[in-house]
Length: 393
Image (cartoon, rainbow, N blue to C red; front, side, top):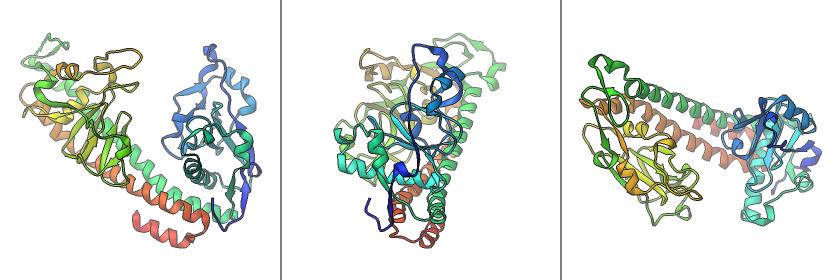
């Protein structure tokens, strides 16, 4: 990591801990008060607030030598290398993650940003190949990072953290906004609260208000595959928001659709997961895209009525997939009197705000990624960076 600052091995900055996994055959080791952090849990933000799994008191006792306190800094070192995070409560990790319990000489959040910069170095050097597929504890401890005085560490962490904090605020706000839209959908189209006084009737999708019906998705929406001639290799750092089987994860400079649409992962482990796309966007092959063509239906309604992978008919076992024919034949609720269109009009402002927040977050993340190496190397002074960040917020 080219730098004019003094470099120190990670192993000198605190206690290095490699995680472990208790026996998965004993279910009593899991499900308790201790977060059990694995690589997918390091995706969201600086601090790991939610984990897919937890350990019980029994599981924690088995791994007591691997216990991490709050503010331990983690980095994935096997398979998917370079994912980072910071604990906020006593936690454990699996064996794919090395962590540092920081000494008083290092600010945890500053070290997290050093790790983020190491990620780039490792990926650039190893190209994501076998050289860095497994970074051992000893190799990890030998990696060197710039260590300025503690006060400067904290200042750098504050600048970069201000950007990440705003991204996290936007993420949580978007979760709230989507939850509001989901709650309205449930009230109108699952519980039928505003419409029960008009009576209920049986239908292929269960009991529904009198006068309502059902329709095949292909009858009320344009349903087609994603762009078969576009792959992740086509992604560039600017352009339109792109969707793959994992959701919005890149940008494309062409193949854009300037509209609101739904993207469904159609092949692989994520088959059936859906995303609502707005503005200029695209999706790669192995996805299905659709938007409302019936004037009584809104695409926002279609997003929620098809949201949830259990709704979609999956074929195959080793490689689950949704056929385009099955997608078009999917039977969905068809509300009367343009209620589904009214739903879209009602929730559209929520998704407009989500779109604004997502754009802002991408801009802030790009700013952080630009400043990160320059602050760590000393190329940009803290005071200059502070003014630059203030102009972006």
